Amino acid sequence: MDYITYFEKAQKATRTMVGLDKELINTVLSSVADALISNTEHILKENGKDLAKMDANDPKYDRLKLTEQRIKDIAGDVKNVINLNSPFGEILSEKILENKLQIQKVRVPLGVVGVIYEARPNVTVDVFSLCFKTGNVAVLKGGSDAEFSNLAIAHIIHGVLTKYEISVDVLTLLPAERAATEALLNARGFVDVLIPRGSQSLITYVREHSKIPVIETGAGIVHTYFDESGDLQKGKDILFNAKTRRVSVCNSLDCVLINQNRLADLNELLAPLAAGDVEIYADAKSYEVLASSYPSELLNQATPEHFGTEFLSLKLAVKVVDDLEGALNHIAEYSSKHSEAIISEDAGNIARFLNHVDAAAVYANASTGFTDGAQFGLGAEIGISTQKLHARGPMGLEELTSYKWVIRGDGQVRK
Image (tube, rainbow, N blue to C red; front, side, top):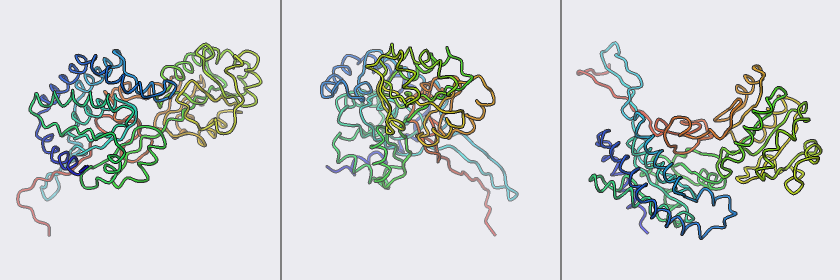
């Protein structure tokens, strides 16, 4: 298959995007949100075909599954994007030099944004809405697991674009075959940036094989440290929410660290998790305490590989640490630099944790489940970056822009 044709059309479509009025962009996005709702039955039917191909026990199953409420939520995220100000064209700085040259630093789209993702059909909508809002063209390579779902959603978006006489090439969904991934990784000169979303293995593969710049959205190996001064009720609520709200997403809790001086509270702290059927892998000290009350069928002794694991399921590691320093050391060794949290009433410990932990999002007395573009007020999100160059954490509209220098003169020449 000639993938170059896809990329050439996408690159050409960037000129279409630059010429679109911001009011028209919002009108199109509103129509997309409405079309998703009105086509719910069709989307669910196509999603059902994908679900039928996957084992329901696969951690990706929940990410793949769409429901009527989830489609409403996806459409709601599009509406959120509409209500945000587009950064495209924003003047970041300006000055007049002694020679009277007027210089402005202006936000511009990245251009053609490629995204490789796995069983997450919501990404198709999220990426399109954010790219369209910021004047970017999107080239998407979804996984075969979500092929029917992605095709249905892309077809709906293309229908809206056609209605408003906008080139459908502003959204390209590549075939689900593996060859399309290889072509996209090598689309240098056509695609300006590539963003992988999915498992650590996918992200690593893209980073190591891409010939175009990559913004890495890493795995979420998430810790929460229960400090010596931690409030027990807050801890129970936060840990339960962070672990069980939605286990298959990257902000889900993977490891609880508890101060050794609070071991007497460990059973009560984790009791809600037992009710939620969370399977625990406990180190020697915590296992000894939990054995007295945590359900035996859900309690296991941890081995080294359980620490530093992104479970993406109802599983959780537990480790006892001497103090805050022990927690900081453990997190530094095992963190994927995604989201980390402390539960504490000690202002000094909170400040030290927030300052010392190297992660895209650090929390005090709150669930890591909030690491999400919509929750951060960004509308939808393109992904959660765990790197430090260009973007970090949930990536919204601003992170899909670069800038250029605009210089106005009146005949000046350089001596």
